[in-house]
Length: 302
Image (cartoon, rainbow, N blue to C red; front, side, top):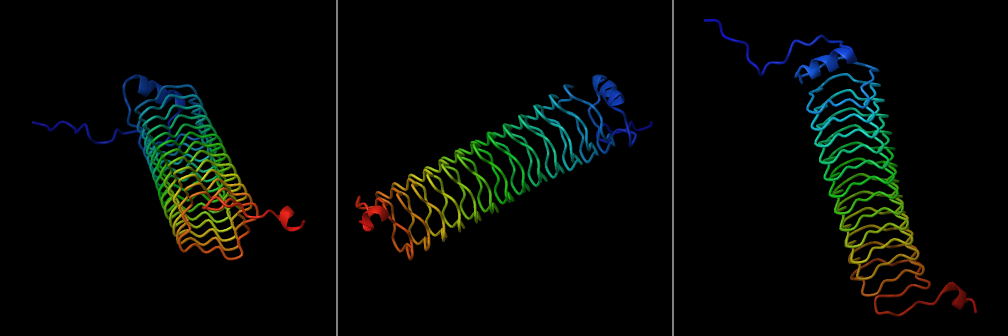
């Protein structure tokens, strides 16, 4: 008796197919589109949930407003793609190349994006709640106003990435490389940034209350007006950092290096400063851990 073909084997797809052909086959119940070539197609507002586009070339394709729940784009070529306002909940984008892509206001909740390439991608106001972005590359990407609650970016690379006004509450950024990253007015309450490198980062007016920032590199970082209430900054380097007007109430700074930092008008009540290096630190107007306010520059010149 002849053995029937296995259902687990990939379908015999042509290398190049049109959007109309793909939609026709999808409507007929087929879902396996692995390895297809479909560059510059228009699939905006289409429902392709559960489709498998693994290792496909979909560059310049328009998926704006499309529903792609649970779709598989693992290791796919997605450069210059348009996912604006697309629903990509639970989608698999592991190792995908999304260079110069648009994902503005897209819903990527619980998506798998480990090791994805998102260089210069636009993720402004995107939803990335509980999304796995471990080891992803987001250099020069825009995530203004993005929702990254509970997201994981451990060991990620975010050089000069714009995360201003983003919500990263409870996010995991352990050992991430984030030199010159912009966190202006971002929410990082109880975020984990242990071991992260953030030289020249901008945290102006950011909320870092109860965040874990121990063993971090914050050399020349801007933390002016930032809320670091109850944060752990032990064993960290803040050489030359700007902490003017920062809230450091009960902040742990033991064994940290604040040489040359600017703490003008900062509030440090009950802060832990055991073995902290405060050489050449500007403390004019600073409220010290014991509640004593240092003389301001104006008072010194009287």
